[in-house]
Image: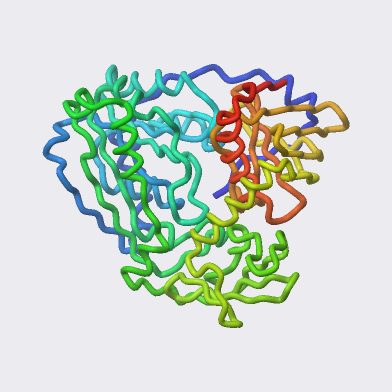
Length: 427
């Protein structure tokens, strides 16, 4: 994947006119067919299959389709499952950059990850209840880091109450394992399957409370791909299966050092204490010295989360790194505007740069999670903050900080409410 990039000054970019909102478009059969045909070349090697469950209670639609976000195959799998049914697609803003017209024709409509967006709700309602067209949404917004669901937004049940349409869930197995985000788009030989289920009928949505609906969605997104791999004895034998694993497992549980892990080949090595772990074909971690602190990758990730939470409570957490800064303010390009500095602590984010012209602050309550990614558009590991008016994409010079920063953002959001701190303040 790639994105159109331009080099401009901060003053030039900040002065650009902002794009006008666009109403979603019901994709015609030609563009739906184009998507279906283009998906074939990627789905055949994955030996993609799917099974439908309880769809009779969904009726004729339109439907709200909720799909877990595993890898770049997600959209192609949806195309194979639902073709020729028309549906709109909730798409992140950067997906429109340089190809806005085409994305619009395909039924995509933009939103910004982890930024409150009332316009998105209006567009979803417009597609479902005015255009009588389904909507595909990835409620996690961000790709999974550790093979489990990323944090879901609260009050999804209220959205279902508002939209008043059946909800279809699409749960995939094998997609994350085939192309995990940390592995820099390297495919593994893993079969991919999807279970398509009518999660809630219109009548069930009407009868259940918001809290009950939230619980049902949470359960639908309660998965663990590494556990599934082990239980189903799915062997991944590629010699590069641990490449980049340090992006996820950034802290050594033996010596507690951060940022010194290196995933290469089939091993994860701590360059501070020398301890080595092997990622087995069944997705387990095994220490070379026989003492494995965490054999299950999500358990290791949870331990890191607990460590971050403790640092925040003790006000010892700090991200302090130089960054290369890009901006998105329209649908024309990703604008590279120069160098800067990103700080994140218990007070939130502070981004400065561009010869002193850029200063942006984002408080802990601004968002429940963080738009962060590995090898983003093949540029590098990325942390994104910002508002509807302007998004800042920061590429840290310090390695191994993306996962920790997402964890810190999520834990800080929860702590800010538990302690009754003030809301966001940004400028």
